[in-house]
Length: 160
Image (cartoon, rainbow, N blue to C red):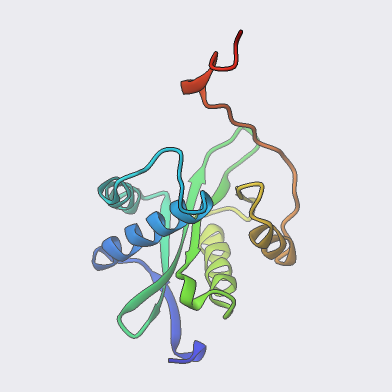
């Protein structure tokens, strides 16, 4: 299959399971196969089903033939300064990375955001994912905030 045979379209209920598998692949990759909090596939499937039922969300898939090889999600959020589109869960299966699929998914996500009523876009990337960070900068995204996290399940473990 060639990249010309890949299409990007809105997800359907038949795509829920392949999307959930992609979400799990993304989660595991973010933690290099050692996530600090394992998440069962069923939780990802529940997430997919939940967001696909929302009128303020667009879930997109990249497909080759009948196979889902990538996904992206756009969620509309109301803010005091106006609506914003959160682009989430952009993932392409490993075999199809660096073939322009994520670029096509992002173009479709931006179009979906406009259809939802905003051109104000935002996304989050794990800080050590240099490849994704370069990818988004190459698409014209700018770093504008830094998020911090703290796991409280081991707070006090270093205390003397």
